[in-house]
Image 1 (spheres, rainbow, N blue to C red):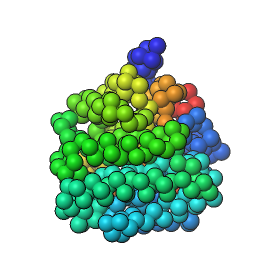
Image 2: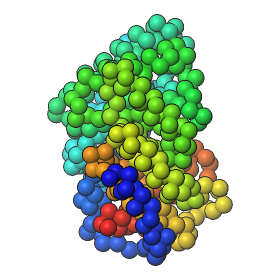
Image 3: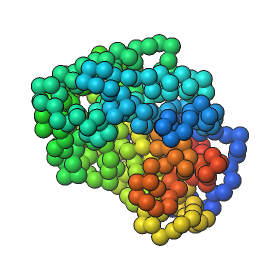
Length: 349
């Protein structure tokens, strides 16, 4: 039955949904229409949730911590950690009527203190165990916004499916994953634990490796609930059939699915310096496809969709690739774009 759902989806006349979408019902908000949580990110160091929290809460009901809880900000020394950004995001999010916070990520090979990769293997293992324990304990504060999911490990695989030779892996092998998931498995099962990575929607070899890795972790007796598909895609690729095939693989293995960092570049080749109506409409079509695809996932495997940035000025893409882009669903002045309207339309089908 689960396979039939996505097979039927692939037969839907998506190509017929190409009408220009410029105006939608301003009274309807994504957070109210979706029957799964729809989130966004807000980096405290690029703006203030205190200032823009009302906009976040108007459209979304979950926030992802983006950069605020990466180790370059939480690790003060080998044994001193500051998780206050979690408290700040949580309290401001709760004030603005958000329902939950998604922790991203606990372990990554980037954005760490400069001295961390140089630690001896035994010291690095002790550090990681202490860090994960303290992080888990800090999440127990009950007056803060509910944590409903955690990216325990981020981007541990290469494109060919092999393990990334990060400093974590070189020092500890796959034990660094086992250690982390074991510690966070002590949390309430209502808090879902994810493995998060990019290109899983377009690279079947890497996706197979991610699924095998998660299966292996479960065999070690730790909890892995879901797969975070980052979904940094463009108006050109990957095809909806490729994305549906990837989603089907995850469904078949019984993991929850989080479209965890969704954005859709409308200028991937740097040809434009403004968002033309044609580009905006093509982007809207793609967002429609993605949200319709997510609707077809069995409800018990839906964790939600996170749009990777509140509005176009807060996207990571222009700074990273030194080009114009407008990949998100809210525009320069936080106005709903055609893409926002197409997401609403997809959810109401």
